[in-house]
Structure formats: structure tokens, C-alpha cells
Image (tube, rainbow, N blue to C red):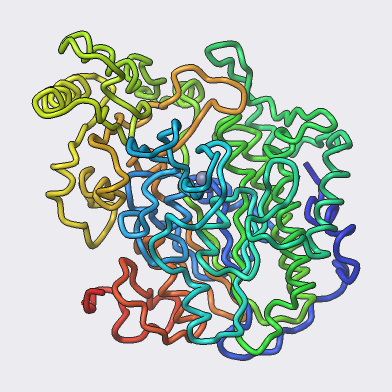
Length: 553
Ligand code: ZN
């Protein structure tokens, strides 16, 4: 798909953008004046390793910096909200409090007992679907907040295809956060759209209203053009991003979407003059198309190939725009989690244990079995097919204990289940340390456990068991497991003129914040955080280097 997606939209947005112009040599100052932190949603290290030789533009540029291809979202709950909460806080989800995209609180006064990670559930008349967006649940500060403590004029701006990504990266006091609300870029901060957002929305609305540009098959991606028919009859793998004019959801799951978010980021850099103020600024960007394409078509086929090569070009255009501003900027790129391909394609590639989950394993169905056995009413269990499962609060005392015992027995006896831990077991486990590859499953669960928000049971399926029994449009594959295909993500650091290095060492995404702080010359005391500054890429304060102990907050 040889389209300049960033450029196509940016041309309407950035009158001063001159892509053909030679990049201005940025004035060297130390530290950089603008830090750009990019999250590519569902960009596993498996995808990065596989496609790295094909990248020629933005991702190729970042790959000339310091490349940790063994980055880890080290916890078990490998979902978007927990993953983004680790990127700029220096903490794991057990500390950020963002233990899942949503969790259950049976004591809520509203009828919907599910809480969305980025909502304020106290707002009257709301639900976890029709919510009031908020950073309320994020328990710790983000990098942008630490920057403002040291440099009060520092700006903190977040842009994303998803509200929860912008909210978790921007934290509690952003100057601006703009995200796709399903139809346009919007904010929950009460601000009127500045000209940059108005221009972006006008350009995107025009792009959505017209049919997508015809696909020109990429010769490399075409080698992956094998169709797979899924249970239910859907066909994936043929490299088609079907989108009728006006179809906003299909736009979101196409390579054009990331180009639009990057164009908005560029417009905000230009209008707000980010990186040109008295203090360093922070721009967080979360790009969601890779995730929507992974969920809708699986991450292992021709469509993901086309998406990642398109993302590479869009990032290349964005960085060329950044070069043209003359701002001395640094870039960090990582991901909120990885992903698992569809079992139908994995089977064809010889992954013999790849299978779709048994639908009898849903919390509802396991709950029904227990209800019949114990002779009790109600759902017994609340939750999904894996991850956090909650026992119905209506069950008390001995009934509750028996329900827990039965549930653990049913899960543990199922051939698709690797482990089922009770909250008592997880609470008795120390927060892990050291190489995240070596952590046990319960330690991975501990790193995303919160007493108020996590389930009474954490269920982990066996490797390559896809927790979607019946694929449907937009949802054929997913992530969320404690396995490394969902945990391992690239962590890339780049700045013009900096040397290249390729550490094989493991790095947690919680290490990004203290490392970024050192790159920026930020000397604020963070108190206790889970992550460590990484000396491979920054001059770390002695007190923050890997392996040192610091006082508890
Ligand atoms: Zn995600």
C-alpha cells in the first residue's frame, strides 16, 4: 500500500510542512527540548523482529538508536490500559492500580457493576460503556507531572486513537489530551478544539467520507496472501481492508488511522510550538490501528504486513516533519502489549497447541455448573473466560468458600487451563524482581494485582489458547495472557547523533520513565517506583541504577 498516509492528511493540516525540504540540523543542546514517547498498540517484539528487515523509514530510523528488543510488559494482565499505565509512570499495574481494561465492583450503586479503567463512575447517569472519561483510577504520577514539578512551564500533551491510552500516558495534569472518540478527535478536559484539532477533524472527516485509496499490493506482503476461513465463515488473510465511504469503524482498523493521529500530533507540535519553550516538553502518542487490525484480522497475515510497512512510512514522514521544525527532539517507542495470531493460521504454521477456547470456560458457564452443584441462585461467578473472575457478593460465609473451592477445582481440571490462582495465593506472593522472563506465573499475576480491583480468582489459559471461542467481525484474535507473545515488546530510544546499540538484556516497560527522566536531566525525586533507570541508554543517577535499593515511599 504505497501511500503516504501521514503526508496525505498532514498536507491539509500543516501548511508549513515541506517534506521535500532537507531536514534542518537540529541545534545540539543537552538534554533534548522535546521528548516524544510513542506507543504502538499491540506491537509485539515478535512483530518487530519479523518485520525489522523490511522497515525503510521511521521504524528503520528508530532501529539505528538503542534497541531493546527484549522489552517486557512484565505483568500477567497484558491489556491496553494496564500496559499504557506502565509506560510513563515507572510502575507496574499492581502499583498504578490499572489492573485491567475494566474490572468489577459489586458495591457500585449503579446497575452496571463493571468499571472502565479510564472513567469516573461517580458521574451520575453513566455506565462502563457511556462513561465520563477520567484519569481518576491512575494511582501514581506520570513523567509529565514530574517534569512540571521541576519545570513548571513544561508542557505535557497526549494524542491517541484511544482515550485510555492518552489518559494513562498523559496522567493527571496534561496541558492537552486529544483522542479519537469514534467519530472525531475529542477531549474530556473541557477545552474547545484548538485550530490544530479542528483542521485534523476536517481532514479526517473528509478522508472517511471518501472510499479508501485502492490497495497496491506490496510484493513482500503479497507472499503472505493466504486466506483462512474462520469458524462462522469469516475470511481473513487476503490483504483487504474493506471500507465503504463513511464507515468510521473500518477507518479505525485501517492504516490510514495512524496517519491521522500522527498528523494531529504534528499539528499540535506546530501550533503549540512544542520543544521551543523555556522548559522541555513531553508529547505522548499512542497509535491504535495495529491493535484494531490485529483484533479484526489477526497479527500474523498479509494485513498486518501492510499495516506495519504503512506505519513505518507514516512515522518516517512524521520524523521528517519534526526535523523540519528544527526542534532538538528524542523519541522512545514501545507498546502496551503483544498479541496472539488466529489459531487457524498458527495450526497451518505447525503450532499444534493453537486452539480456540472451550466456551464452557466462560465465568457464566462455570458459575452455572457451580450453582447447580451447590444448589444456590445467581451467577456465582462474574468475569470473562480468563483473567480476573469474581465471586458473586450475594454468596456469604460457607457458601462463598465452597463456590471458590469448586471454581478453582473446575478451572484447574480443565485441559485448556494452565493455572488458576486465588487472591489469597497472589497476596501471599512477593512482588517479583529481576529478569521478568524467569518470573513464575503467580509472580506475573502479582505484578498486576490490586486488592480492591482484581478478581477473587485469576485464570490463565495454556499457551496458544485463543480466548475467543466464536470469532466475529472485528474480533478474531486478542491478547491478555501471561505468555511472552503478549508480554514481550520492543523498547526503542532514538535521538539524532546518538550512537546505535542493540542490548540483548531484558528491560521492563516500567524502566522507561526513570530512563526518560535521566535523558531529560530531570532530578525530581520519584519516591519508590518499580522501574529502574537503564545505563545502556542514559546517564543514570547513582541512586536509580539497576540493582540499587531505594527507600520506600
Ligand atoms: Zn492495546
